Image (tube, rainbow, N blue to C red):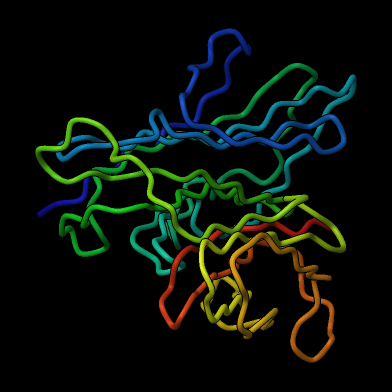
Amino acid sequence: MKIFVIIIIVFLPLFLYAEYENDNSIIIDSVKYYMATDKLTYLPGDSVHMCYRVTNYKSSTVVLAFPSTQEFDFYVTQDTIGIWMWSWGKPFFYIVWFLNLYPEDSFEATCSWNMTNYYGNPIPDGDYEVTGFLASYNNLPLSVDIEYLPAGTDEPSMPTENPTIVSSPNPFTSSTNISFSIPHNSNVNISVYNLKGQKVKSLTNDRYGKGNYTLLWNARDQNGEQVSPGVYFYKLATDGELVEVKKCLILR
């Protein structure tokens, strides 16, 4: 099975850009970074249309400096495991060294994914995380979650009472509060992992009663060393079973 990928890079006035249903954004120093997919829930036969956009709200020009080679620009993971990416080692920015982003101007890259893995095989149903990565020296990865439902499903199933976990603030610079809820007495393990799947920090591995709890992660590893800025995953497991995986972003 072939993997169909379409990459489009456009420069248009702001009012001409498409709107997406499922999005995530952050504004840093009057520059907005925006990642989105066209929907939140997908069915068999659908394609995921994704977008990464940078908009300059400054009164002066912003320069995006691209290296001669690049890492992947869009990637998909499930429980921190890589499913698909584009374009790792395919530098479609190769001829671009410096890009001037003028006031009120935007730069956008879009991509379509037909929901197959690296080998062209259909993916199983479940929850996935789609991340856009600006392949420049001032890159900023942003992610959104999507849900892929099995054939014959008309609408998402109703949630059940399960343990939950969330971090705030996110993104953060020095520390974040990781809050979790346990519906019944459980052995709880919460750990932080990097993009390579390596454990960075174990936050807790203890017995908890039913209730809500909050842990502080100070962006340091198990040895007390400050971790590098970027994307990290924190995993919640209860009674030895993985329950939920979330993403957080450290800025410097």
